Length: 300
Ligand code: OAD
Image (cartoon, rainbow, N blue to C red; front, top):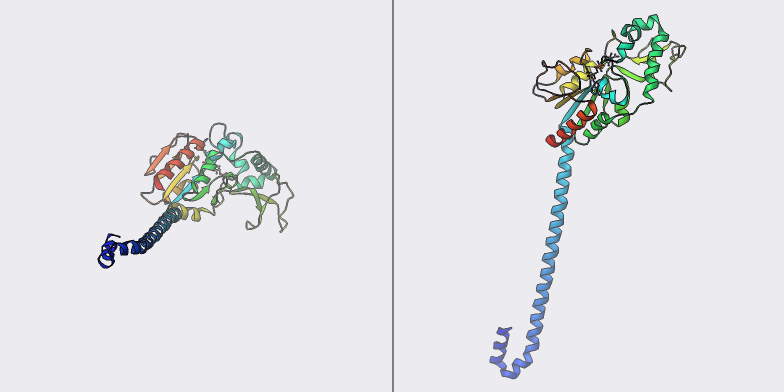
């Protein structure tokens, strides 16, 4: 503005200044207007940049979390203890099932040959109870673990409480109570309607249906797949099993050296021979919840 006044004074004198002053003001206003526009543009550009940065950061964090999931695989081997707090008896604890029944009378192919009614009744009672119980905190904690890890469950249990809690990957080593199969062709497996399997219930080949249970003395067909899964674990968790029954108890030997192994069980188990094992001597409900929150803290 000063430049403009001097210039005009030199040429036109005081009157010229007075006449040219509005022109100068017009120019100044235009510059101000341009500056105003520029400022607006810069502000707009900066806010766009900030929004983009925030969205990008969110995307990267979310994507990182997602892509982390399959990186860590937790393989969980469960036994009767994981269902104890749901009200299902274990086998070898005091008051356990094998105190009331002789294994040889109800859980072997010879027992089936000898007394089908007794065997059917034993599994009918187990199945009937299954309709009266619910999953417990341990089952639900394992479902929660799936939010951050690839969780693969290998269970020795014949109940369906892992599935009912919502676990996605459950392998049954010893069969399933709610299924039955042909006694002459093991490939013929059926879902049983209700809890009772009766003498005279037959498969499509006309043979008596039997419980879909792996009895003592029968091969455990799922063992090779379970061994492979155990070998693929980044973290191995064992819950509520006395580790008395083979080949299931031997699965831990397939875990790769250096893999952290956790055992949750309130009992006195001799597990000194398992390297890298952390023994959490607690019931399944509290122990599993604690371990799950530790794993989430440490590994995500
Ligand atoms: P067991 O009865 O042998 O062992 C149960 C384990 O659960 C013990 O180590 C207990 O200390 C533990 N336990 C008890 N209460 C618990 C709780 N609230 N929380 C956590 N743990 C608890 O049962 P399994 O080891 O599962 O096979 O038995 C393996 C197989 O033997 C079964 O699958 C079954 C059985 O005979 C067949 O029927 C083919």
